[in-house]
Image (cartoon, rainbow, N blue to C red; front, side, top):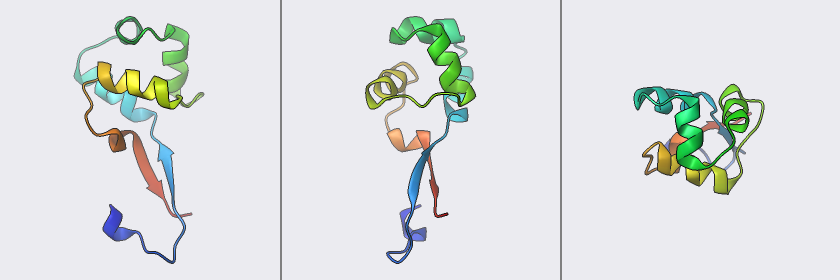
Length: 81
């Protein structure tokens, strides 16, 4: 990914909410189960998965722990626009 980014181009990291759902599904977790594991309100989990809300860094860490994610970059895509 980094080799595609040039110094003369601006880029931003964009949160990929669809990855939360994919990882949760891969672990056969329900939204309720994820909410219980993380201590995050079920409605907030649903809003994050739907893209209505972006998680704070603290919330993202809780999600990463529950979803067994070691590399936080999995939650982001790069945009050069």
